[in-house]
Image 1 (cartoon, rainbow, N blue to C red):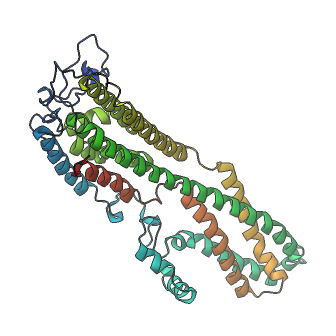
Image 2: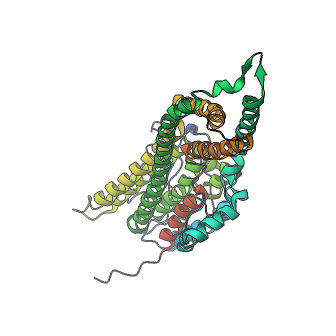
Amino acid sequence: MLGAGGAAAFSPPMAGRSPALGGRRPLDADVAPWALPAATEEATGPGSDHGASNGDHGASNGGSGGGGGGGAALLSELAADLKVLSSLRPPVPSADFSAPLALTSAGSSYTALWTDLTWRKHALPPHVRYYRHVRRWKYSTSARKILPAVMASSLYSLAMAFALRHVRVGRYQLGAMTEGASAAAASLGMPLALLLTLRANASLGRLNEARQLMGRMILRGRNLASYLRVYVLPTDPGAAVLAARYLAVFPWACKALVRSEPQDGRAKVYEAMLGPEGAAWLLARSRQHVAIVLRLRQIIASAASTSSSRAPPGRDGHFYVPHASMERALDDLDAVAGGCERLLSSPIPPTYSRHLSRIMFMYLALLPFSLVASGSPSLGAMVASALASYVLVGIDEIGMEVENPFPVLPMQQLCGALQDAVGEAMACELPPVGI
């Protein structure tokens, strides 16, 4: 995967020189590590190759002309490395090793991107849909998770109903304790329903926000890739391809953040696109997604400087508008990373969940008293308690599952979508404008 010269000359900023950008010369000792020198006409003239020193993976062949032989070699190497990345991270749900199996349903699921065929299967007529859902009940991941709580509630109701009818303590019949139980259960039912509704709505709001963040990441990443292809590649192919490599890695860094993926898994992805030294530099950063945005900003700033230095007299500001657009795209990617951090680190207040759990416990504990008071037999009380606990605990569990939205989202497909968009944009052969 490494081209000639590949990442061999990469030196992290800590070593006193910048990660090279498209073969730019090393920094002098008195220059800040991140201050890339502008590639002027004297350093690299129009149409000539960048210097022999290379920074990141595959940046050695970058011609500075309008996508000449050096640019074609860089694009070819980029395409080959993206294929390797696709083999490491196939954009299919089954390849997502960090997805919790307990949340992955066998049928239609939010953990995979839907198509028109998925919607057609989902929106069947009611009698067909209900039959299918009941028939596949035993495969429900949510039902399996709440089954212990439902069984405990039903067995408790059976034992309590039997005791209330047949057990005496001295001269007192336990059944006398059922007086007023119906009113007590009813008084708890309304606040319980309200708390469950508010909890479910808040959790679904977090899920919707996370999905919008991922969509925003794909949209802005695709925009940035198109800017690189149209504005940067013709004049500075080394910078364009290097930026595309970091952009293809960005979604996987975000996924590693929200899924707490191990370092060795990230290293394979980074090495495939950035080479060993580039991957080592990125892995040394504590917030890798932020470091990628910073690196992209550095590369684009250097490309803007190169374009301005080569512009004809009077047109030195021609790159201002696309540069500003690319900076806005980077701001959006940074905002996406920040939004992911916020959702991951700030849950719905745990006090709310604890209070809801306690009210749920009180309600289910009082339920057999209310059922016996209404004349339900012991087995009837058990069945009624099982149904009530299945409904209430199920709603609570669904809210708990989607409160942390990232295990539920199809992250593998979403990250692969941006990766594919980068490859498609950079490989796109554009026809001449013809004006």
